[in-house]
Length: 83
Image (cartoon, rainbow, N blue to C red; front, side, top):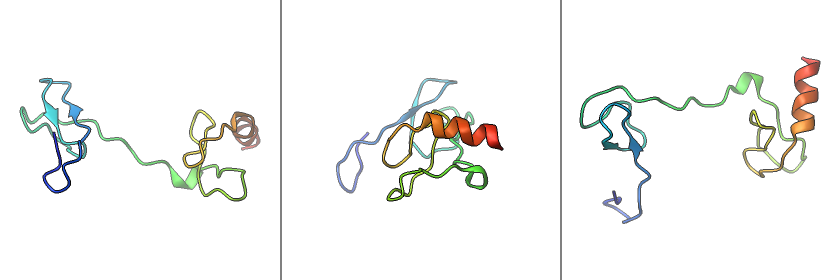
């Protein structure tokens, strides 16, 4: 599906119930009404900041920074073992 304003492509999500395409931010399928899974935002209270002093990202469960993409798996493992 294309954006009616800019003409860019929207990455549609697929309904697990009926297989229909639904807008990416939709909470319910626009075809069958089934509730769609919503991606939860990161838990900011328990976040681990990127150790690169110039970066503002947080480390994900794989130990990769959300902004610069650097892998800090060892840092993530040491932080989790300390806490």
